[in-house]
Image 1 (cartoon, rainbow, N blue to C red):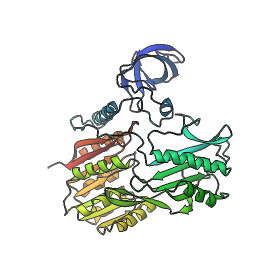
Image 2: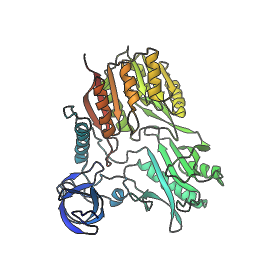
Image 3: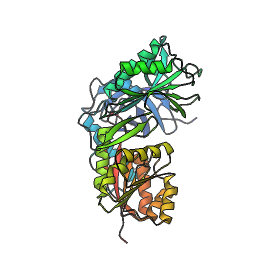
Image 4: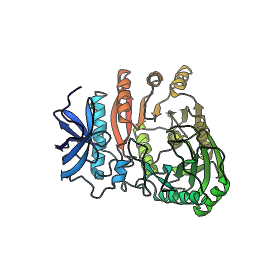
Length: 457
C-alpha cells in the first residue's frame, strides 16, 4: 500500500495557499495537495483529514487559527455544504479577482497563451437574489413535504427556504407551492425506493415581465386534482401564468422527463432582453441572470464591431437571444440549433419582434456550417455560445473554412474555451482579448466573451 504524507483522520495545522477552481482551499503537506471546504488563502487552520487518494486528499476545518481579510463574516454554511453558493464566504471583490485569475490560468496552462489580455471581471452592484430560475428537489422530512438542496456529493437533503442567489419572489413561491401541495396531500418522491409522486418544483420568473411559470415534476402521469391544484397556485400567486406537469418516470438524476402537460394557463412565459421580447418554454435554455446577460451580450456585440452590411451566423442559437438582439444592426442573421423546440421558439420570437432578416435551422452546428460553406454562404461574423463541453473540432474547421473576419466566442467554461482557442490559433485565428462577466455571483462559474480575428497572411 502506498505511503502518503497524511493519513485518514489525522489532525494537523496547515496554511491555505490557494483556491481550487471549485473554490475549495488548497494546502500542501510535503507537496501533497489537500482540498478543504470553507478555507481561504492566507488562513491558518486546524484540519482533520477525511479522505486520502493517489494525488490529493480532502480535509475539513476543525478550528481557524487566523482568518483572511477577504472572509465574509457569518456566511451561511448550508450554502457552502450544498454547493448552492460555494464562494459566499469570500468577499465579492475577491470573487471577481478569483474569476479573472481562473481564466488567465486556463489560457496559460491549456492554450499556452499567457500574452492574451484578460480584462477585469465585470461584476454586479447587488450580487445576490439574481437567478430567474430554480430547480428544487422535494422530499419528505418529519412526515411533511420539504424543499431544499442536496449536501455536496450526496443525496441527503438540507431543508432551505432562502436560497440567497435566487429571485426572492421565486423563494417565496417555492414555499407557497409546497404548502398548497401539502394541503392536497401530494406525496414526495422517495429516491431510494423510487416511490412517491412529486420529484421537483421548477420555477421560472421573467426579470422584467414578472410572469411566473411553475413546473411540477412528477414520477407518474396520473395527477389527482392536478388542474384544481394549478388553479389554486394561480389564485394564491397571481404572477403565475403557467403551471405545467412534467412527467419523469425514470430512475435518474436528470430533472425533466420528455412529456409535459399544461395544467393551467400558457405553456411558456415571456420576458425582455435588450428590449426584445422572448418566449421561454419549460425546457428552453435562457440565461439565468438577465441583468448580467444583457452586459454579456452587449460586450459580445461591441467586440463584433457590427455594421449594417454584415452577414452574421449565430451558432448554438437556442431561442434566438443573440441573433435576434443584433438583427436590426446587421443585414442578415443565420441561426443553427440542434433542439427543434428551441428553433420553433426562435422563429416565434422573430415574429413577436417583427424581425424578418433572421433564418433559423435545426441541426448540429458543425454539420450545418459545413453545408453553408458548400453553399458559399460568407459570414462576416460568427457568434458561438456553446454548452460547457465547448466546440466540436469539426465546427472549428467548418467555421474557419467560411473565413469570417471575426468570431466572437461566448463561453461558460474557461477550460474548454482555452482548448478551443488553441485549435483556432492552429487554423490561423488569434484571440485578441477576453472579457470575463460574472453571471453567477457566489459560485465559481464565470462567463467570458472573446474576440477572435483572422491572422493576416
